[in-house]
Length: 227
Image 1 (cartoon, one colour):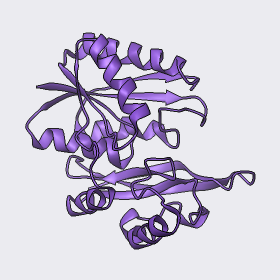
Image 2 (image 1 turned 90 degrees about the horizontal axis):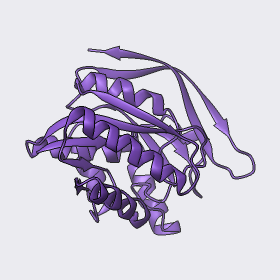
Image 3 (image 1 turned 120 degrees about the horizontal axis):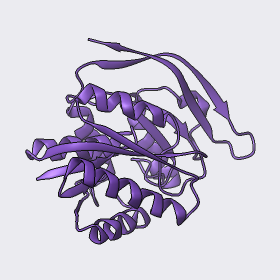
């Protein structure tokens, strides 16, 4: 089947795309929503511009749309993106990285139904701990780009997710933190996976901390692509 993949640049959406490729589906295009603020209910914000680089490294066509991130208005923006992509790249279904978020999945399913597309969520209701292990075993290199949970501070920004895996287990037991960050506890960027022709290296970045909320973001300013 021909699939359009919704991508944020993070581990879940990219691993979902990877699994669809493993099942021999053809990925027709990568679609990205670019929120203009960090208040989006549905979409990734940190370093979203790097999705275009990831798509290029996978040799998959890329298409994007912007949204102001208003709670329901962003859904019509998403629908417009998927409709445009479907007309341009002629796919039969869409793929997302939803794990436990009914808010996200139900709305994407509704848009897919309206546009006569099948909706695939290959990570849906997977055990977060075993899912992360599978990502590591599949040679995914993932860094943390945003933190917004007790037990996580700006010192975790830029760290390899595999290196803090055991700490995430501790936080899960102590604070019921979702190990895959599905509740927004943390966000990620995939620097390498088997679908990439090259690895992304972060050359310049800065940490931005919100003193009111305690959340922090890694803003990546310069990258390189290495063989």
